[in-house]
Length: 468
Image (tube, rainbow, N blue to C red):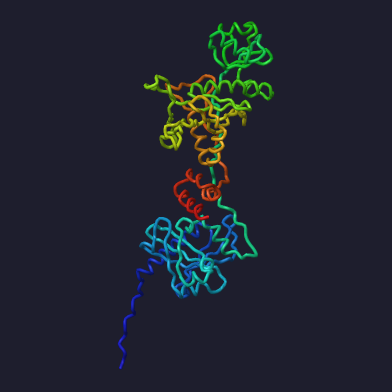
């Protein structure tokens, strides 16, 4: 009897197979981003391994023949015990036994398809202990164990034998380097020099105060000569100089001079201009023991109706980056035991030095703080408070302070008008071909410094630091 022909059954592709393939596709894309080679296994040879990664040098293209075996597990739903920072994955006994055999490194990559996230763990390292093998549970850290191009170095180190290695150049990262050098965009265009009977600046300054005149402070005395950004040919100066000896020079001649004395004289005038400039910006000066000046924000004042006295109050300043920000530049600190007892005022401040680079002048900004008892009188604990504050500050905080100061000094409007003797531009910056990735930088810093980093790096770094 002839057998009736049976039609061939169609080949079925299950939803689980589609989910698995989506996970493998994500892994392949991540491996390619690392610059490595993805080699999927075929369905007939897949026995708990979905593919291999071959390590290559992304810069030279050199293949190493060092292989990592990869098992993919994908899901479209939530993972076990998942929260913002971690989740749990349980492995099957047969899978674990297979992965632990042989000497090839094996990694498990869990794919969360809804968010297209990948997380990985080196199986043989994780299950070194018998306790973990018995438990068969992996706790993933969602920040430290992301499988993406940032994991390329760790993946390569896993593949390379202990007794030999290959150097992998880091992927190039172009970065903008912002300095603390604030461009001097304009200064007084003329320098006036005249003979004077005074031997030192202090002598002339005393004479000017006694006269009640206020001709300005943009000058200094050297060897009985008065150097000034003010016009010495005006009558107000005639009582302190010999009017017949006035000479006028272009400031650019001093600013670009190779002669050390001329450059020093120009810088002295710039320093005098900076004092007046900061006074116009409601900033005071404090002279340190070495003679250098600290420029600090003065507090605002108000009338105390109970005492009839003026009193200093806190001060905020608005500045713009990508959005408008407010910064408290004068803050009052009270005793914790007695909240009514004022301990000190803390003032944002800076020290500055004029520098010349590539024939341009810049003000080197060094942020600091100043401490007073009433907004004016220096606090006896200034040095102690300053040392404590410096220990707390990280590079992100200092960087933000530099940017704020640069904005404040360069800003002018109808109230804070431009000053003829000194104006500022932008911070000097430049593109460099080699940069440091934020995550690598942050892993070597203090927890308080993480706040200046992007939000995604911030979260990962905080977790890393907390666990290290």
